[in-house]
Image 1: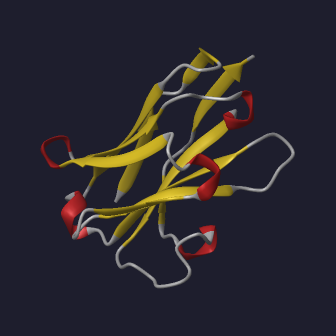
Image 2: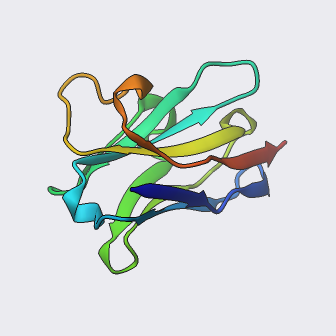
Length: 126
């Protein structure tokens, strides 16, 4: 299974970006969960949100709740992260990660994920 993240770029504060994570080697419905993480310079990687691919349920971290949403596109075997009302503090490298099964209580830990994308840079200017 390989994950390919894309869609990052430079955007002004208040703008929007949509990141995509394309999965190859397996249909996304066969994966248990896909999450997005981000890492700002000099900081630890931070959980952004997940989608449970079998159920379609999503969860978004408090820091981006109301601004970010996660969706899936089965036809493209892709999971998307829609980011609206972007702020300079959203700047960082964004990663998609997946595992075969959902894990209760540990979805925000990056060490439980088996498959990772390479990361895509998001820069929000003030």
